[in-house]
Length: 187
Image (tube, rainbow, N blue to C red; front, top):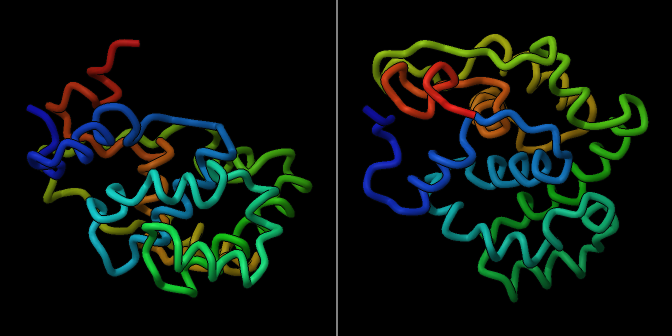
């Protein structure tokens, strides 16, 4: 039996089946997930997914260098002319976080290397019986949040970081019976 959280929402099901908890080392995809998870703060994931294409268009498929150079005027233009979440601080965090990612890339060769070092470069595979058992945060997401904030990142609270770790596959939180759980997935 699949995880229940996607419900009957087609975008949520597609995300669950093809992306959620699948390990990735692609810095642009990781930056996209960081941005979208930050945009979700206070909202539902289905709202964010429904605006994902607009985010991809507005931020040039989350090109980190492009995003790091956005001006205030560029960000105001994104707010006014793209179907994104209109929270200006969240939009400004895209530029801010892109700049912070570049600093990490210079220090660790990639954003991926930095993040995956928190789990010794191997996903944490949980074995939950039901969606209700999945935590909203963990001691690891709290540590990651604290470390990213020290490096100047915005919208990276511990709950957001836990969802982010699921999004990039650092954590596999599919329920045990889900065909997409690491132990059930056929590669």
